[in-house]
Amino acid sequence: MSAAGTEVVTRVTRRLIPFLFLCYIVNYLDRFNISFAALEMKSDLGLSDAVYGLGAGMFFLGYVTFEIPSNLILQRVGARRWMARIMITWGALSCCMMLVRTPGQFYGLRFLLGLAEAGFLPGMLFYLTHWIPARERAGAFALFLTSTALAGVVGAPLSAALLQLDGTAGLAGWQWLFLVEGLPAIALGIATLFYLPDAPVRAPWLARDAVAWLEATLERERTASDTRLHTLSAALTHGRVWRLCALYFSTIISFYGVAFWLPQIVKSFSGLGPVGVSLLSALPYVAASCGMMLLARHSDQTGERRRHVALSAAIGAAGLFLGAGVQGHAVVAFVALCIAATGIWSTLGPFWSLPTTFLSGTAAAGGIALINSVGNVGGFVGPTVMGFFKQRTQGFSAGLVFLAATLLVAMALALSLPEERAPIAASPARTAG
Image (cartoon, rainbow, N blue to C red; front, top):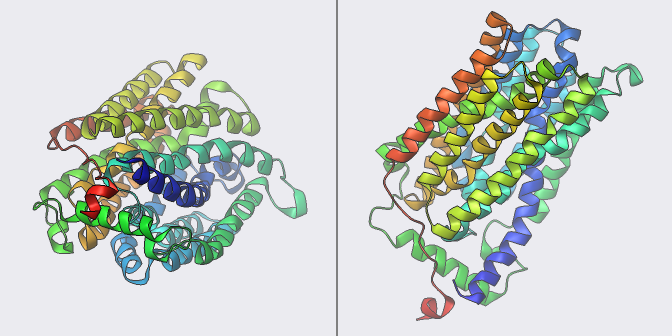
């Protein structure tokens, strides 16, 4: 890419990614704060491990139900308005989690929260395909998706502080956690209406020649291959799309299996209280943030995606197998969790660059939504199975072995994909010709 093209992409990245990054940190705070709230909430409400695991997973049943319709609505009404709607509704429902008293209410609100959030991640990924050329997407996606790891870094000490408000104004610490962490989503939803442009041509901060180069580059990528799919029906019936669904499903089982149980796993071998556990639980996310950026940068430099996904899955599986075997050794078990988190999270940047190599337009909106929808069924399976094994065995080793096995399946599926490297974007001079 020419210096002028690099400057355009850098300007777009600096303008959009920090805001989307912040939105997704808040998204993951609202999605994962249940893992920290559970340190007190389970005992306060008398929730068993199985009830907690099922309730954590119920989020994904709601999420999957509305995923594809949500992303198609986003394409029709525009990312700015639809993502604002998503954030405002999920923020309100997250605040309502403070009112939970029974398992039925717990299940119901988690389901509605998933319904409200449906389409947010694929919507943002689809949105970025209208701004970032293919060659730079793994790095851009990884930079944006690092928020999923940094949410743990931010959420852990924040949750620890909020849990210490226990008894203030008659509310438990976990109730303060849900209330305080739900409000930023509402505020950011309102801000989205004023900050995000729907397309480059509507961005007042981009010069006219920059808009022309960006739109020409993206259009050339969309039409460069005769094998690129454009229609929704073509995407939903394409074998590679369904293989990506299976790959993401296998990865997400371990992703959420670890995320929703991480504080309780740390508590099991550390013996620390809620505050200490919350703070210590931030470190695996720090490791994951560093690892995913390094691997995504190498993926962009080489243009290779599938082997980077496979390598990351293998690293995650190795960490989980090690963690399952050393639960009695606190330091080694914690290092194993850091390795596992690094591997699992590092799959994300290269993986989400794969669908856009052969999907565009409505096919990209529907295909990305389908992949995320099917994959997030794994978000129901992972926490639920971990809860089942925890209640049956009174430990985490069996559950960690199960999660590791799903990552080995993901590795095999990644290696089975056809070899396809990211295209190199053309320079403005060639575009003009």
